[in-house]
Length: 134
Length: 289
Image (cartoon, rainbow over all chains, first blue to last red; front, side, top):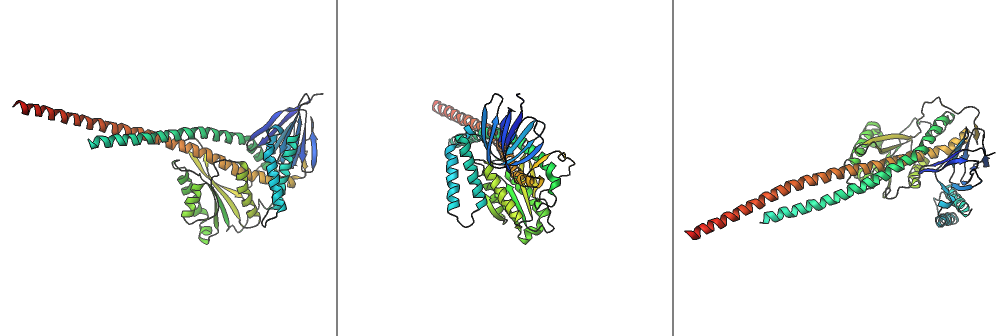
């Protein structure tokens, strides 16, 4: 059964993940979806959210991505995101600080606050905390 | 005798200067290695993004970020220099080139005061402020800790201003890393996005989620951010390379000066000894007589 395909997650700071996997769950902007072997060719934009990769043998790798897009085709999945971190690499304290900062900014609305951006920052921070906690 | 001491002091001065330039060269070499690694690390991402951009570009018809504006009077120019000096002609070459380009392409905008600059790096800020350019934003200490987020923020603000109609075009000037010894001076149009002529599009059986237009909305910011990120990394690598080369020739120059001083010193010392001997000999002769 074990039909595996290649996944790579690329960021501006370098590749975060590269490997042969059995399945990968992605946070599409229209909802989560899972890619398995022989998936149809697809281009999808991604929201900030968790990526769950199942490696052959059942080992799962959790990552937090900041949004971007994924290309699926020919049993090759390429995820492009401006930031992607494995659960182990996330600095929980920093993520919590970022969340509190964003919350503070949204609750004390100063004039000239970019609400959309502050909400995006809050979402990213919450996503990282969730992934880090497993 | 005072002369001898003076020369000795000068030799000591040159020597300590040489130690500094040597250390700076070594530091620059280490930083260059790191900077080059970062440029290489970002390549797969940038390459894939360019590929996707080219394929999606045909569906961008009429997108505000692609549409050239008939009136291009308001120009925003982002100049990426360095924070520190002592790197040879790294900054001055780029600034001279930038000013040439401004004279050639935006002379009207400059005269009308509608050419605005965003400077990255202390040296760029100082240079263009002093010459009476309108610097609307400046970023200092950018290269102490290079983060994607801070580079992206510069571009995001510029893109917002472009979309709101504040500016009609955005350009980016920076040093591209060519080799340790040399940089390419670049000036690129960022917005409106120049459309590349490609026949390469996605085959019809591709699924798009949400659709090609929606995807483009996701990808365009990534594309713009990557463009400035690349410029910052290239510039940083170029700066370290230029500093390494400058400090190498300074170290060599110091060695040259030390050789010359040592020779003068030896000659002066020899002359002093000769004078002393002849004084002693003539004193002894006088006693004999």
